[in-house]
Length: 120
Figure 1 (tube, rainbow, N blue to C red):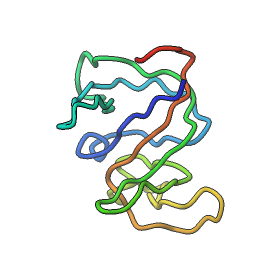
Figure 2 (cartoon, rainbow, N blue to C red):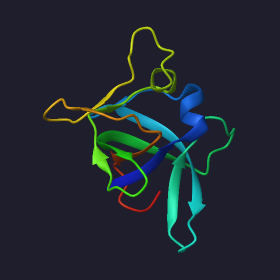
Figure 3 (cartoon, one colour):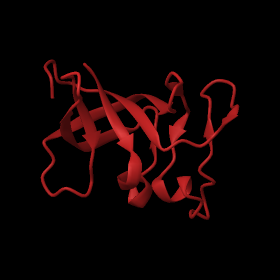
Figure 4 (cartoon, rainbow, N blue to C red):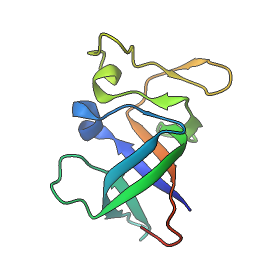
């Protein structure tokens, strides 16, 4: 089953790790209910007890920008790289197939293929 996890904001900028397609992950997530009643999973690594863990392999990574559709990116750089403070990673975003460099983003969707057959 594919599970979509929202990643970004101050938590990822603080100390969030980089994530790449095909990487095995174990993401601690909080459940958040949107105004329309839809439940979203938001990654957290600062809360001691996340509501749920999403374990599996990263299938897709997308950047979110206001007023635009989600756009696929090759990888999600770590928080320090996105802020320009990583000497080994310039934090750039690029399209998966063409390598085109995209404007920076702060919010991302990561699709994780899990072994679970039900909702996390």
